[in-house]
Amino acid sequence: MAVVVQKYGGSSVADVGRILGVADRVAATKGAGRDVVVVVSAMGDTTDELLALARRVTDNPARRELDMLLTAGERISMALLSMALNARGVAAVSFTGSQSGIITNDAHTSARIVEVRPYRVQDELARGKVVIVAGYQGVSYKREVTTLGRGGSDTTAVALAAALDAEACEIYSDVDGVYSADPRVVPDARRLPEISYEEMQELAEAGAKVLNAQAVEFAKERGIAIYARASAGGEGETVVRRFPPRAPGRVAGIASETGLVRLSTRPPDAAALAELLAWLDGRQAAGKQLLYEPGAPGEHRKAERESPAGAAAGHVAGRASVVFSLANLHDFAAVRSGLATRFGGRIHVQERVGAVSAIGAGINSDFGNLRAVLEVLAPREIPLLGLSTSSFRISLLLREEDVVAATQGLDGRLVTEPAPDA
Image 1 (spheres, rainbow, N blue to C red):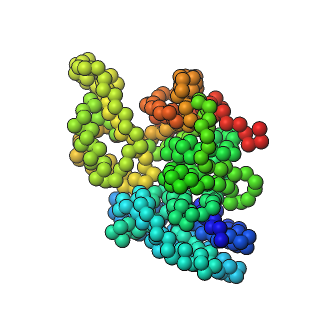
Image 2: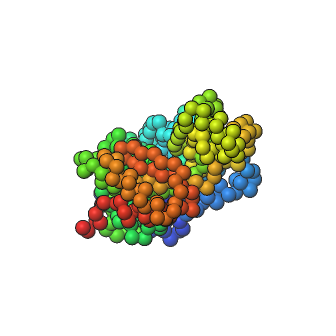
Image 3: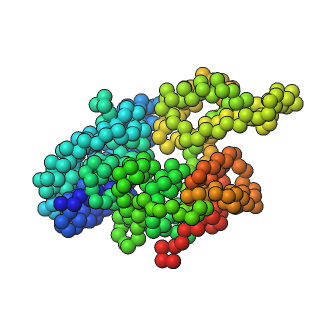
């Protein structure tokens, strides 16, 4: 019998009424003659509430204990959904990530799946049961409970789909697919009927929250199509799969994120940068971007002579910067304190940083898109803190307060994907 994996996000299981609605959908899928594996997130804002509870105890919660705490949210969802299905006469059983065979590395709060051993899942499917799996979690090779970071339930679903050779992986959330920009930021953003693995992965890494980047990576490796749909129903969806190359310069969408921090060394000393990176690695603070601006020889000494304050702020001399996200760094207060103790004034910490990225295959085949990006910023008087490009992306580092205006402007100017009905 064909296997389908369905993942339901936190908004889809936010309360008992919605869980009962998910149970109806799962029962219908099972009734249509398919084996069903369901991956669930924690109910609504449960994960954020558990994090807030931890911070009431300490500003610096141990990562291992955070994983023990946060995985409770998905276990609640999986058990309630299993109860709802069994009450409907649909045999179901729930498993934690470790019971499902999700094996990870030992990076607490940001683990990566290294292997899936779905033997218990396969046994229960063979008995005709619906299997419900707690997303976002696994077990390390040291037999420690781990979590996969924000959006990790997507990764659980796709990894299981790959291990089970499923015919499809369906991701259900509160939006009916992937849009050219976040509809909450750009109300007239367009839904993309289809998108390539590469473009979707870039969007996810740049802040789009519909799908997780590692999940798309798994899907690409195994050739699994992902269907992003709304749990409330409707005909809309986005299919993520392998597509032939598109015309160079096409812009599929605009992704944005806030909650970034930039750490800078001034002047950009290689030894100091290596020391900083080693220190961050020791605290599992993974960077999203590294910027190195060497400046001209002797530039920093000249700046110090003319304006010591300006040189210290990096206004003239070059700098090396590491940008990282606070999304999975739950002990930033301790990191910030540790930086001050270890590096003193050698490291400048800039908070309330955001990023906006334009994504598309061959986006930099000429300078047209880059010129358009800069032309969007200029009349809005948005200062540019940093800029980087690749064959798929133009990324801007901005102040958090400028992210919405930049996202709206770039979506209106750059996105070339037609509307679904066009």
